[in-house]
Amino acid sequence: MAQSCKNYINGRWETGVTTGISSNPSDLDEVVAEYARADGNQAEVAIRAAADAAPAWGLSTPQRRADALDQIGSEILARKDELGQLLAREEGKTLPEAIGEAARAGNIFKFFAGEALRAAGEHLPSVRPGVEVDITREPVGVVGIIAPWNFPLAIPAWKIAPALAYGNSVVFKPAELVPACAAALAEIISRAGLPAGVFNLVMGSGRQVGQAMVDSPLVDAISFTGSVGTGEQILKATAARRAKVQLEMGGKNPLVVLADADLDQAVECAVQGSFFSTGQRCTASSRIIVDATVHDRFVTKLRQRTLALKVGHAMERGIDIGPVVDRAQLDTNLSYLEIARSEGAEHVAGGELLERATRGHFMAPALFLAQPQHRIAREEVFGPVACVLKADGFDHAVALANDTPFGLCAGVVTQSLKLSTQFKRQAKVGMVMVNLPTAGVDYHVPFGGRKGSSHGPREQGRYAAEFYTTVKTAYTLA
Ligand code: UN1
Image (cartoon, rainbow, N blue to C red; front, side, top):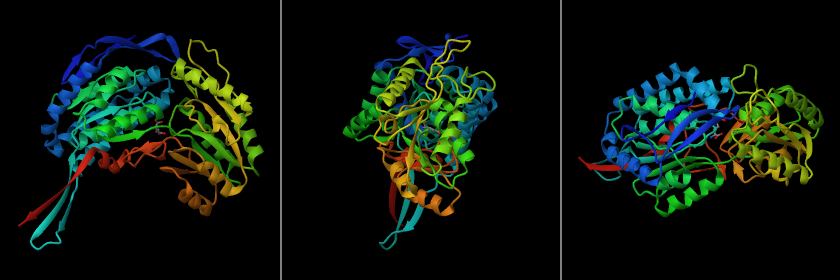
């Protein structure tokens, strides 16, 4: 049954200028939600409300902010099964993955409820006689949050929770594929006792709503997760008006399998990192770099494991991989299979469209043997498409791992403490995983990358304060 989702502006639920729908990628005949689509003008009303609410909220007590976030976190955790079902229906990740994501969103709010109380500063003697120095953190003001469809509960949570914890007001624009998840989150937030205007949900296009947020002089900071192209546009526009910006964009993350690796463990890391969540994660490992001495054995094992993966309806029990999120993403995936073949990459497994009982975007996970210059080894696909590259020893593997315009995360599978330590030092990324998949991160520690993957301060954990606060240094002659 389709639910109807409204925008939440200045403490009220509002219809939009037009209406949109989201559908179930596992069953295209099912409409999940009908949602209110705002235009730029309606976005500006929300921005104005957030700006009006910001000063008082910035001075609210940490207790009040902690209580609100704790209540939101508790409700999400209590309803994680139901929210997980909605997520699986609307985005298409498997039900266990979706419930896990809902729990993660709840835990993030709980974590930042605690952080609201731990807003510590510094007190120092001045270099001048009789003078004291205080260093404190203050809210930035109005934060515009632009979130992607692939983690429709967790990514909004890890932006909204710190924004509110540190005393900012929020205008949240979700991706248009996942309005029901956004509205469910907003509904929970709307009952947490925040003053009107402190939190606003505005659904609509990037061109209208996103642009209004990026251009408005009332929006002090923009936190964005999405494509490289959009991220670059936001960077230019916010640089021109000197707004604070945090961008989380693509990845082409390597998983390095060294000669001494436990190959079964390496295969599990590869399958989970490359294909789970349908490969629709910026942390996915889409380049599997394997030492030549174990290459053929590894590929044989990975091929068998890949062919055994069960693809199907996200709500079905026992499914490993749900559908691709929409037609456009499926077309992108299929075009990369074509590019891989035409550039001479060797097809190992998968890539076929699959028929299931319901009409959905089902695709078998695809694996290729590639060369470093192949586009499939360089460009982010954002689907269940991975390639294996052969490396001659550790140094070559590290060089291949770093040979990318991206730098989000990198994994290594090895039994050697020495090599894993060297890999941790040499990988030009923001996050390194040893004997673990590159995807699936903790919620209480920093998240982010280098090079073309990220821009601005880290997200999550207490490092989130860097973006969501501004530092004040006060001098007092006492
Ligand atoms: C994860 O791998 O647990 O968009 C999180 C993404 C990332 C989040 C990945 N920002 O895929």
